[in-house]
Amino acid sequence: MRKTDTVSWERVVIFDFGSQYTQLIARRIRENKVFAEIVPYNTPIEAIDRKHLIGIILSGGPATVLREDSPKIGKEVFALGLPVLGICYGMQLMAYLLGGRLTSSITREYGRARFRIKRSSSLFEGVPDSSIVWMSHGDSVETVPDGFVVTGETDTLPVASFEEPERLLFGLQFHPEVAHTEFGSRIIENFLVRICHAKQDYTPESFVERTVDRIREEVGDRKLIMAVSGGVDSTVAAVLIHKAIGERLVPLFVDNGLLREGEATDVLDTFRSTLSIPVKFIDASDRFLTNLSGICDPEEKRKVIGRTFIEVFEEVASSIPGVCCLGQGTLYPDLIESVSFRGPSATIKSHHNVGGLPERMKLKLVEPLRELFKDEVRAVGRSLGIPRAVLMRHPFPGPGLAVRIIGEVTKDRLDILRKVDNIFIQALKDDGLYDEVWQAFAVLLPVCSVGVMGDKRSYGNSVVLRAVVSQDGMTADWAHLPYDFLAMVSGKIINSVKEVNRVVYDISSKPPSTIEWE
Ligand code: XMP
Image (cartoon, rainbow, N blue to C red; front, top):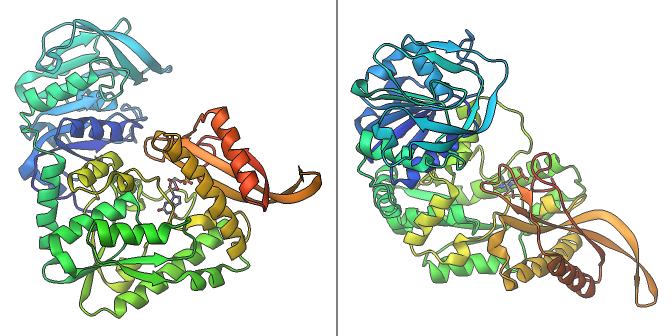
């Protein structure tokens, strides 16, 4: 497990008991310009940077506190003299550990409830006496621990919130982090400002300033190599690193032959002309396509691409003397979802970027964005002056168009897909729809179908258009693009890409589908 980080702005730590809302708590805190960090519930308190800790949150979770094997935390967390806020499971755990009594219920209360304040509390400053909150729980607190007072109730719950103001311990049975809780943001702000006395100094500008210092410390006078893709994450990471160590950053852009139309030129132009970062260009497209020939299985494709990438990267890196560090644009959700954080979980798709490289090449990993969410990366990018077009680019997978060509990847099939994809994306941009969706692309199917073009029978390729809306790519809904727009794009594709005579629109959401087709 990684030791929790030690950058120097004050922070709130969230002990994660497995709630689906834990990341939301972190986001809400950060929206208040306070840094928030999620740690697994069993992280020893000594592993946390106490110097800058201003408060603790115990998250919700699906377990039942009364079961012996449920996740627990040591009581010492309540004796640090720091404010602690328990949310849902976290509140029940606080009550249980400090001598209160819980009742279990077979049915879960789920949804909106009317919350009434029974006693004034700094947590509820500015919150009306009666408001709507979001509940999602089975158990509840029956008797509060000694010294605690009940501060709020609902129609079904006599203890919907409690506190021990002397010891700065607070509990909420409902979820303030969820938008359905009318005054949730106010409650979180109160916790941070009135109870934890947060300085609220976590801004994109302060992030840039401190991160640049930290990168300088981490890299020293060595060289750092980094693969850039033109995507938001690697671009923002590279600009930060460049700001910190200048020409000692060695950025590589590898053309794997699986890029979209005009992509290589665009990316090089952005780096070299707009950002003044001299990127090294490596055209490895033939090598990738040769290695992919004859391969149809999706996981096999991903493995071959990952392996080829590592080979190319290693060759270049070993030809540059003095490279000791590897830069990566890893984001916070990647870290939280990672095996080392959560423990092993089922592999749905193996994501290949530069995984495995640091260990093999004995490089020190530098990940300046590892604590940020995607929207925060964009905010940092804006404060660094990175053009909007780069910051708003849709995500593009490392294995590129290979996972959007079902069946074998050949140069001809890549050319067809590039043309179709380009028409779709350009149309989205022209109609102001590009920024409305999380991601949009075309997929080439290994299916031909009969059509009629002019007076003649045709037998051509079928393509899929896919567009999704999403917050973070973890779940996604298919985008309800206007019919007229889809009709126009379909017509354009069939009229201008002669190999294609059928266009279909993907109306599946994630889950159960994934965003990419492979
Ligand atoms: P899925 O298809 O798993 O995709 O729903 C979720 C998001 O991840 C992107 N994706 C990848 N990104 N390397 C990446 O950097 C990969 O191997 C990879 N596979 C999928 C996908 O485009 C979507 O945004």
